[in-house]
Amino acid sequence: MGYMDRKKRIFLMSGILAVLVFAALLTSHYVTPVSTNAADKKQTKTPKNVIFIIGDGMGMPVIKAYRTFKQEKLGSPKAQTVWDPYLVGMQTTHPDDPRDNITDSAAAATAMATGKKTYNDAIAVNQEKEPLRSVVEAAKEAQMKTAFVVSSDITDATPAAFGTHNVSRKNKEQIADHFFDEKIGGEHKVDILLGGGMQYFDRKDRDLVKEFEKSGYSILRSKDDLTTQSSSKMLGLFQEDELDRAIDRPKHVPTLKDMTQSALAQLNQDNSHGFFMLLEGSTIDSAGHENDVVGAMSEMEDFEKAVQAALQFAKKDQETLVVITADHATGGFSFGADGMTSETGYKWDPAPILAAKKTPVYMAKKIAGGQSVRDVLHTHIDFSLTNEEISQVEKAAQSGKASTIQLSIQHIFDQRSFSGWTTFAHTGEDVPVYAYGPGKAAFQGWIDNTKQGKNLFHIIESPSTYRP
Image 1: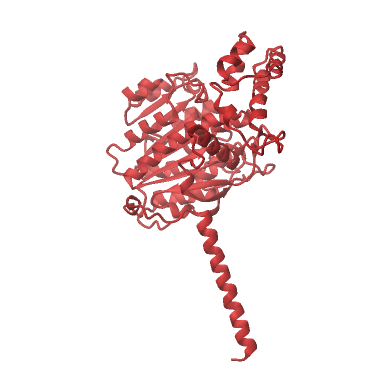
Image 2: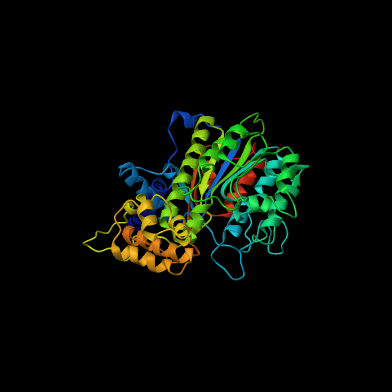
């Protein structure tokens, strides 16, 4: 072999080695390493149960903000969220829409529930308005138990797309009907439904609450009901529409964690065929749409406690796959905003948010209802407000509109925390994917949101041949 041939061969081998080293570094940095924990080694290769978790509107900046919020609250700068250790990749979120390239919750949920893209507004139907088979339908065909736990109303886009079919997410009464009427093998598709939305089920034209009750479902309306009347079939409707923000929620309304633990306890009884559970922190999205950083952090905290309950179950069970992701980001939240200088410090500051005892939504309603601006602000905000801040809310109160008052109060928290927002709508960036348990490897890397549904179908329909 000549000198030039040897030189070319050395150069080629060096290049290959460099690529392999870079790939190894990239994988080690972005993908959760294989656990050496003794409990994890006991996991089955094929998941028996699946807990699919969505933080609606939970983009990366909101996750970063919540982590910082938690660190400040605990006084621990190294504190993580419960899902941080399980990051496995990112997913794209775009719809297949003739106009839009940023998804809504309906198209995103359809992609994850069916493995197929569709148009914004669609509830598990394709472009031709034909029903798309969902992983929940596959689970029911496989005799698995099913449960939905959400902080939205049960007819909202995400639970609707996993559990029903409709040409538009706006048809909430029809969707409520479909939860009862659409069946697999003569059985309702979802055994446990917990969330809000009583107004869509208890109607003058049709009383679905009574129909579900006659079909063997326990009807739950309060936290006490959840602990005393739980059964294998449950319809829990705890408020008329979506649940109030966690920080504002009445005591009789359960937390997302309360509902999660109750559902898991029932699903795990006589669990010979496994279960599929959808868990959604739905109202993270609602707070994002309102550009309400106090509400967003409240909902993230409520969501994390529920996720922790799911992970604790999976770690003990060792046969449960937990996937945690978002459908899209909402509000264009920025971790840092105008007003930061070298004097103030380049710092997103959670301290003012932690000082809020209620959300701006709650406070605005009280002021619009006739209560004194000063009394409401001093009662529900645990820091000294400036005269200028109070005056801006008093000026907004002259409109008599709760929405205008709310924005003025939110402005105080945004300025003090250096929180920024770019829109009251969704944004189109990729969102994170976290996974724990048997089968998690299938969710690694940069994937499209349809891969979620395809993976879930494979797990549910072909468990004996499933190889992540």
